[in-house]
Length: 174
Image (cartoon, rainbow, N blue to C red; front, side):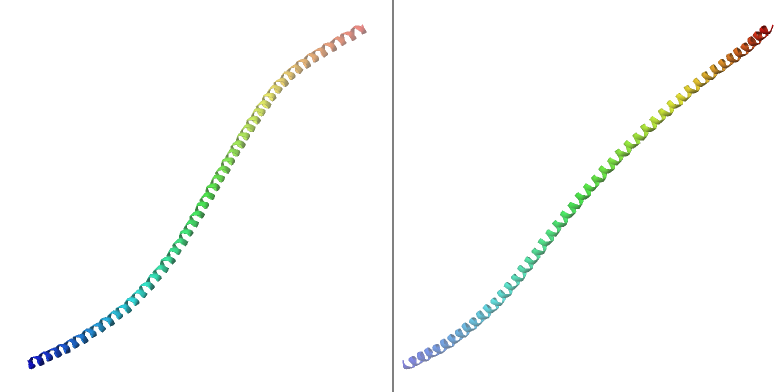
């Protein structure tokens, strides 16, 4: 029994020793787990810091790009407005030129019609003057003929008077 007790005591001592080794192993493993956890936490913090930094960089880049796009959109809108205003000015200028051309064409047409009317009036006056000249020429011919006839009668009468004068002079002398 003593031997058994000694064996039990040895077994218990070995078990205690094994338990102590197991406990030490467990503590070592626990310590290694704690170190791994600390290392993981440190890496996690590092990754989180890098992630936050990358997020801030991306956020800033997106904000900057958004600002650029807004600026570009405003510039495009301004250019579109300028183009629209230029087109409107060109349309107005074209309409003004067209109106001016139409007015010039109407004025030219009016001047042409006035010139045509003036030419027709001058032709009518020329025709009238030609008719008047023809009428006056005809009257002149009639007057010449009448003058020639009267002149012939006057000559004839003068020659008849001269004969009568001669006869009278002869009869007075007798």
